[in-house]
Image (cartoon, rainbow, N blue to C red; front, top):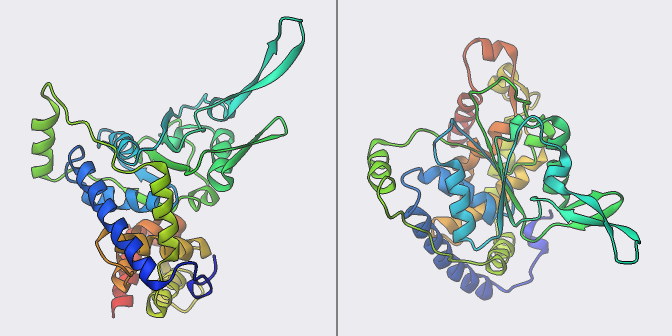
Length: 336
């Protein structure tokens, strides 16, 4: 991804007009989602930012916090064809990708036909992704990274847009296979889902246990979503924001002169973290009703973008530190 200065497909007035239209669309999406998902504004925002930026998100939280409901709601509101896969230890790659079956015609001639698996969707919910075996996880990884799959030597392109929203239960460690670091890096954001606030939980109890439940309406469709994603890549990013992204990402790597990082971090984020930040900072600006990203966007996105791309040293973990503490410290330093 090159710097934005080299790309000037739209003139400034056209970008501003398109951005203002996108602001209205995104505000309508937010409003529609909030009719069904109560509270959890940060979770909804970060998940939507991943989709608006054209990427995938990993939702981490204990069961029963409406992670699945959020994904199905987003599919309906964004007008995307969605599928759901419940991951289990015995799930095979062909259960996700699809498989070749043998057909026989009236003349007795046999031929193979490819039957598409659930990965052929615009929004794929991968539920409890860490319960599948590494072989199955890596089958999903190819589709996330390359937007096509290969079965029996044939290439099959996935629909556009294609987004994976995966959920992971942080409690259940038995019978789970932690995602390898290279695979975690493919997720644009890691979104932590916490218990709801009291007022939101009260609303959940009152609204979801009656006869009529609110059904969300489609606000966008796939074509419009792709237009907004393209617009986000065309939004200008100021030199100040680019510098802030580079400074933050590099400060999270050991050996770059940051004393607390050298002490506590075993390995830090690679260039994908900076790319994710460039996209998500623009998407966040639009989400919050602004036409250009600011340094505040960078600081607000530090945790969801960096936390799954770095690991602490044994000594730091033994002291009870978390990756979030380290990122919080780096943001504090950046703010001066």
